[in-house]
Image (cartoon, rainbow, N blue to C red; front, side):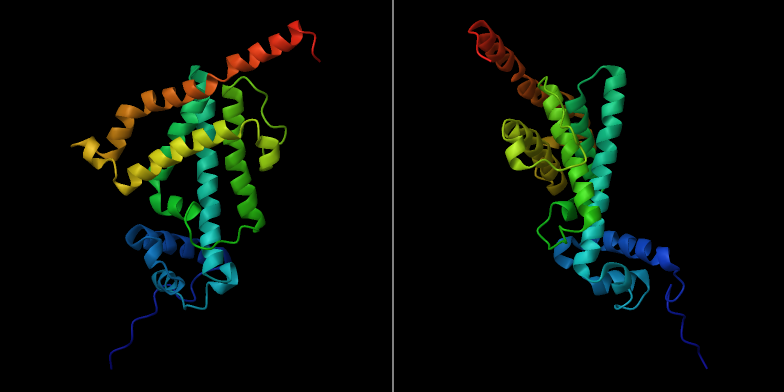
Length: 239
């Protein structure tokens, strides 16, 4: 009699390994099918567990996507902070450095990047997700403010309210839109016709320095008017 093959991986995961196996399987599905073909059943099949098994860690598909998005925000924060440290040591533009780090992170794991900013439902009240999102956004706000000669937010781990950001919101939106838009264009292949024979990474290598220097220059241009206004108020005796 021919024995049935063992169920791959099933009942062999310890408590922590199943979570990591499901995330790895989910990102494999994302890379192959994108968000449109993403299902919890397929992720469980690839992890070698029953469709009900992931509920212990994630509850449902929303929970799994939330965990992946949290990792995506962590990726961005880690890459941007490393870029800041390197830029500071080499006396380069910190803002240009985090812009490049953002794009390279997106290119390195486009499936995870799409989850972070995709339209699929996530639990945006999840504490780990909120902390990771606030940290990534806080780094962007901090570097935009510093590039303009302003003090950074007092609490970078807290996502600033729109009201508190209002003086800097246009600059923050400009930086984020430019970098995120460039990342998305590269991932989607929309710039391939410009890259000719170059790979997307080669295209980034060729143009990133100039592109992000222009962005940093545009944002830092706001420093002088601010100083002029202060000098004007001082000379007129305003408080």
